[in-house]
Image 1: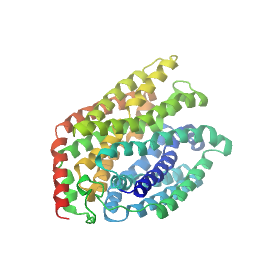
Image 2: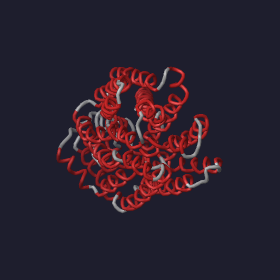
Image 3: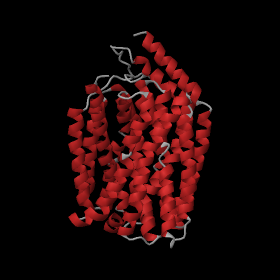
Image 4: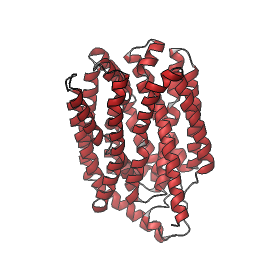
Length: 427
């Protein structure tokens, strides 16, 4: 690879990082705006959960469609379209003045939320298997950083510029700008180009989507364990995203400044965990195909332990709560980039978007109802009970699903490498 090609692929990483950062800011800042928006429309926890579940349900339904389109057509053009939809639907969400209108337009923002499989598969064709964990980790830094930027916009910027509607106009406009940048600045890459078996191949064969290969996804035992952990694993993230700020404010007595100065360091630590998880997973992967799974299993088990201890810390013990939340943040994201990389360790290039889309579909199929379930439990008991119950149970289940994947990953990974070697010989 020439220096120019190497520099360009990092340009692509930077563009996609900012796409994800701004998109996650737009998507996640609504959690920090719960009190403001709830006051505007005079709604309760159950109705708030319904608002957030609406977008998740729409995203869930569209994952298989996005995945199929990404494997059939230009991923760069589709990503540009997704960014345009993000900007347009966020503007619509800011314009409406009734709860019903807000519910519908917020649900429409889920259309672009299911667009990430194409982004990851395109990056996987720029970087080989032993680098993907780190690169995915860098990109996934955007989620917690977007959460942090969203929190700043919600707690500091929104009151200064006219309220929550104004920041929706701002992030929606940025979505339109990113759409133009992706459309004109990012080049498509042949599927499978970065697989090590094709290093010496000058003319890449075009690998086309086939239903036969798509069906093979479901014959890989590792993918079933990935699906199961995904179904359980996204519950905690949605609970924390949409309810944690209200928990701090209403049940722990934090004001806006206390929330900001407590959660900002926690989120920065969590952000570092994405890259750490990817880097450690890549390192472990050099020695064993089980490496990424082992790192992931440690992450969810320790995350569950420290979250349980943090939520059960006495309200007056703020320093202890902060320390335990920091420890939770270290372990929570360790599995994220490793799961994505594992999908690509066992599936062929032309159906990877579909494979990841199916994973996200199954994840969100359960997680779409997490805000509603949390809202119901919170209304019956309290937010503390809802958060600790859902988070600990879900992560413990993930740990056991990862244990299952440890016994299947070797066979599925070796099968893929044999397929790639066979294709390289025929070129």
